[in-house]
Length: 497
Image 1 (spheres, rainbow, N blue to C red):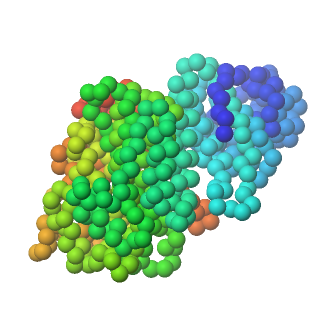
Image 2 (image 1 turned 120 degrees about the vertical axis):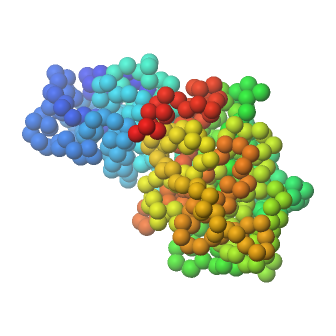
């Protein structure tokens, strides 16, 4: 989809030849002298357009307006969140229509968050999965113009939003692929394709190379599958050579049966989404290739299947991780942490300024936070604040969870250094405490995206989260010169509430 940012007054928007003109109407909108202003004023005066955000009014071949169809959508105070909601509803209503060219007129005074929301909201609602359909439904919408009062000051925000939209869609597409398509091998191939983008390199390691590294925990999980594991190392070098990188670690379980501790059959098909963390890392790199920020970023993706073959690891087994720590397996369905822990140890070699792992890790996090916010755990307060702020700005929010030492007591065992699960209570926290053992040598954060990486039911499909959050965090590092030792002023303000 082609996006364009353009300076447009209401009168100029009325003259735009397009299939649909979407006019975002803020609270207190008054009637203007141009055709768009007259239509808005008449609709508001007649109370045909309610001021409540998300309410819409459709018009066909309105007088003086070149667009075939006009949609008026209320956006309340015009904030990014309200704009995104309105755009998603309006663009969603165009699915199945022949609309190919859309013009979105933002309210006068719209800021960067509104531009970002308009671009990402449009991309989100117009997305159509077609990869494995014999008669795919085509995405009709091809051209989108974002109209603002003055495009110049908003151009950088627009370019960032366009890159974010591309990365989010890339992550969604990968995560939506069926597990017999999106294998660990396929993820490695996708990483190599990304490496063709200037500034990105990719190295894909197989079983022999991983064995040489001593990743016994990762290999233990992969043993039960006929699909060979892959360990993917991505590097984006946009900053100075001596700048320490941000390292993103994505869980890449391309299908999770639960292993010997097998899952119940209902909704097991959704376990193809268990590589949502890996997809978000790949999606973030796709966005970096578009935006080209002056930062250094490393992506690490341990990828395999968790299957119940005769060779599969089993409850009671002891695995030796790359760090040398031994792990007693009490539940083979707690496999994500077992592949991530070796990747976290591998991350040390980059002398990172921060490491963020992203994983569809625990059902307990879904119980705690639902599907609105991702769970966030961090050993560094500044990193936690920066991620919180990034999530709010990207409309991809997270919520900080505790890491008190007492939560780690449940991971004690008589037979190894640590068990891979504790009790049911605080399951998302004990999972994070397990990972924390392997991330002691750098600022570390863990994002549990089990509730946010995909939707179930009639809207079943990947969301692409938290690509938006990760990208916003990385861009903030560019603005701060790559330092995570001090949060930005806005981050400090957010921390104070």
